[in-house]
Length: 367
Image (cartoon, rainbow, N blue to C red; front, side, top):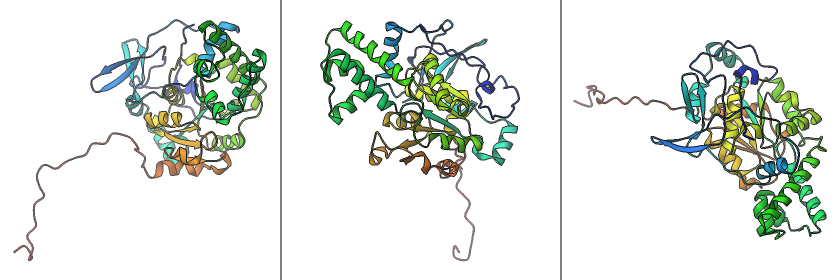
């Protein structure tokens, strides 16, 4: 199945509390973005990622093949992305349009009425992007439970070492099965175990009905402040929406980025979420618990708030803010993230250089 992302106007992706906005002018992003597999090309000194238009998506059927294709994303180490400002290519009536980080920061500008509103209510100018793993749901527990079920079914011994279990969560399933646990060597056997592992994962995910502690209270606070939120993951959309509904979080997220959007790196999902929220990447804040996700956020000119847990506090130094739990956050923290950078953080600025030296003024000391 070829994944396809079809975006309607940006207002359709706005959260339920978003205000009415005038129609977008033709100079802004197109009304339909079709994304597929990414191919790197060099354009001048910048690198762009180009996609090809694919046919419409189809519903994924449950089964060994369907679960196997999802396992490659769930139990894998994803690429960070956007190291050189990569983006994607959209297709318009007048031809293809290449989009990258700088383009989004330039084109996703506020209209006149939005500038007035955001000047009065500056919090609404931000966009919050939440990673699914260990930020919305404790997926470490779900993944470890899937590995234990697979070990029990295959008659294998589940390692108790904390170091090995961390590798099982971070490394790809192929590497873990072949070189860490030594459960399989043949490719067909590895694919079978991966498919079964994915089935266990989704079965366990359907039982999750409680989000990360303190998340719902934090979402209530930003919902009251009318800050739009998005959630990103490599999961199948149907499973994610069902999980959000069970946990009572569906109303808080105005945008959802999933497997069907065709993103192949962490940064690309963040950029897609920014487009859906109609917020410039430089005005977005990413909530992550992984070092790779923090790096991807910075590559997209976004701020990063790290949750201490999977990594210790000293390992999260590159994050703009690190907290142990959501109760430590307040809306004012979001303003402080951008306060030291100014309102034009990461925007290109022109510096005027006066070629002629300033004229000296004659004073008594000069004479």
